[in-house]
Image 1 (tube, rainbow, N blue to C red):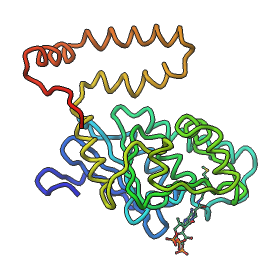
Image 2 (image 1 turned 60 degrees about the vertical axis):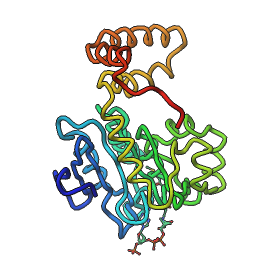
Image 3 (image 1 turned 90 degrees about the horizontal axis):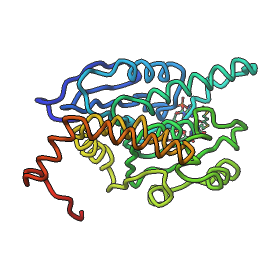
Image 4 (image 1 turned 45 degrees about the vertical axis):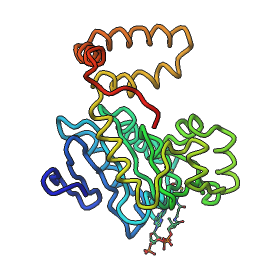
Length: 267
Ligand code: 1HE
């Protein structure tokens, strides 16, 4: 991962493999023998990791070690819980995934193999998803007799719609990577084995944005999109004014006007 000169291993818990590659921090779910199923320990590690990200990074890439991104909730830990314990457990997942959604830098998920149940909920908390052809998306909660509990019913309908999510949960329907990119599960589809490299490329690109623009996209845009239109428009005006008045914006706009920066061209 990365080249030896620019990469430095920052920490390696048993359950996460982390690495600093230039300004990009990579976090690998590291339970391949259990298909990166999410048990309480790995959830705690994810929360700790996102709470203590290295200073100065510009983006995070979240990926799975092995052939799968994540097989979701560790079903071996799903024991008899009373209602209070169940609520606490679900809210723990919400806290962890909120750390990702409201991260101070963009988080990009590199997806492959199973992106199932809580694994899909985890992917939905990131800002950009990149899949390769082995990726498939499923919500087998219906078959298991449970319900999503990691924010999936809030985040997933905004990506794919309530009807598609209901169908997945009721019938166990599985979506392929190519369907996933058409239906909004993921924004990018690469060649086989290409998701991590593409995620790293995108991460380097977003890390070079003006920090205030990234802040606005991560913190303000989701709030504006959920606000009533009049409140949203006012918030947009305020955010736009703050961003424009930043020195970073001024110097970037001057660079364009002085023909010192790239033009926007079709890809
Ligand atoms: C697991 C889990 C898991 C694998 N919890 N242990 N998620 C699911 O319903 C998906 C369940 N998993 C599967 O369907 C398959 O394991 C996979 C398609 C992901 C991979 O298949 P395969 O053939 O490569 O591996 P495997 O032999 O099934 O699994 C390898 C080991 O990982 C095996 O353990 P072992 O001790 O027998 O070697 C499996 O038991 C273990 N494993 N997935 C626990 N999920 C907050 S609410 C969220 C609700 C949900 O996420 S519901 C969806 C749960």
